[in-house]
Image 1 (cartoon, rainbow, N blue to C red):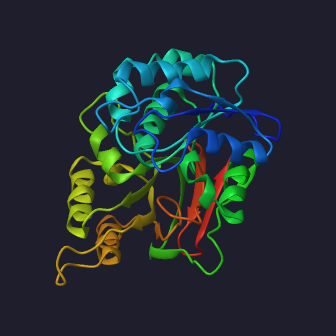
Image 2 (image 1 turned 45 degrees about the vertical axis):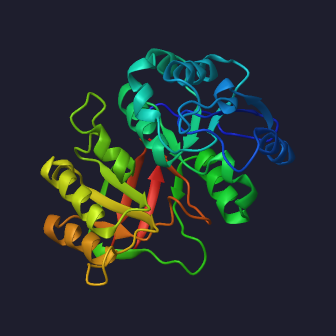
Length: 303
C-alpha cells in the first residue's frame, strides 16, 4: 500500500463535495474555521453546486472536481465536506490512474465509503475514514486530534476510544490483516460490481446510521451470503448511530452483532466510536491492522 505524507500546519487542504450538497453551513465558514486551525484552503467547484436537490452538481462535475484535486500540486490533502448520497454514481467516471499516479491524503466517511473501497482496491492507496468539514463547528479536542494522529503516526497507532467508552469483545481472539470497510449500506452497494469490496484475509470495519435494526440484520445477512464475512479474518463494529428498533419486540443491535460474531467464530470488537458520532475516532483504511479482541487492542501498523 502507498502512504501519503503527514499533514502539518501551513499545508493546503482541498475541499470537495463528491456526494451531497452543503446544508446548514456555508463553505466560507468552513474555510474560516480551517484557516484558524492553521491550514491553507482550496475550494472545489462541487462545494458551490447543487443538482436534483440531493447531489452537489452533476456526476461529471463531481468526478472532475475529484480528479482536479489529486492533480493539483499545491494540495496536500483532500477533505470531503459531507456525505449524503452520490459517490457510487461517479465511480465509473473517475480516471483512477490519476489518483494512483498522484497520491494524496483523502479523508471522509459515510457515503465516501464507496470512494475509499475503490481507491484502496484500484490504486493501492491508504485513505482515511475521518471527520468531514461540514461538521467542523462540532469538532472537539479528541475528534480533531484523532484525525491528526491517524494521518501523522510513524510506525504504529493504537486506536483508543474517547474517555469512558470501552471496546466490547463479541468473540475473543487475535488476527492481523489490511483494514477495509466503512458504512454498511455503501459496502452492500458495491456487491456485484467491479468495485465490490475485497475482504479476503482482511479485517472488516462496519458502521451505520439511521437504519432500523432489522435492516442492519438484513444487510449483515447479505454480506454473509456474499461470502464477505466468511473471507475476512476479523470484524470491528463501529458506531450504529440512531439505529433503532422498528417495534418494541425487535432484537437489540448488540444481539444482532453478537450473532454474527458467534456464527463466524472470528475475533470481533464492537463499540469503536467511529462513524456518525462526535467524539469520533478516525482510522486509516487500506493499512495493516492488528486486533486482539480478548485484550481489546486495535493497532494500525505501517509496513
